[in-house]
Image (cartoon, rainbow, N blue to C red; front, side, top):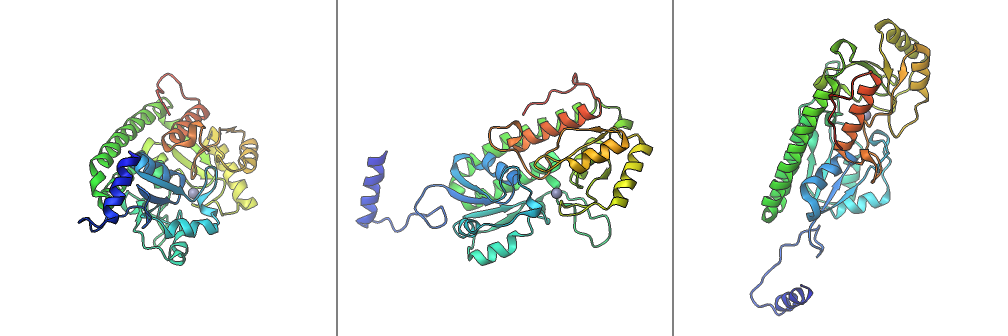
Length: 312
Ligand SMILES: [Zn+2]
């Protein structure tokens, strides 16, 4: 293979009629595409579709919070050399814009939020809820959008992208059905939970789970809970008989533990809301994270394992 490649380079160097080799990879001479993805979920979707045809640089690390992300100098370099930038969009990664402009790169930016169904902000003029990936039907739309964009950038690999995208979309479809069946083991009236920040509206809407309140009263983790708001939340949990309060994976559980303790509710297992687990863990992938969340929620609400055929 190396000999053939060398021969090819020699022929090109001799200028025997080959005018140009289309250069993928941000103008360098390496094979494959360089894709920068902002969040762990976006990176996971790109890897699922592009496979080994792309090197994916993921800006927000596993276990890290995209809301509070602080860019590193190496990010600008990655953005400058990218063939494609895939962002979650809708304010989950608002810090990307100045980074892209200062990097001087010219790669197209695919905002996945522009291709999914968003939940409007609670008040007129509020931005939409950015946590769209918590509904696997939105993940399917995002994956399809990534497939289309990769086709556009590297048409020669379109059949491979289409096959991978379709395969992954089928896995998402099956995941969605199985989550619905698993959550269905909890009586509808008992499907009420309290979470850390307001990140599970999409999941709740899809699977009929009411998010009664959140420890941090906001769509972002940057919010602070006031003593009054915590007291109100405790009262609501007691009044409505909410069984479980769920902290967030990758963050502390102190506030949620205190709220659950005061309200006499169960402290559920941490949920993967805005990030994924480090490689090698069950929740290192998007699908794994939703499986882990569903198991945690159903167990926290006392649902049966019998109807749950979830696989990571
Ligand atoms: Zn969030």
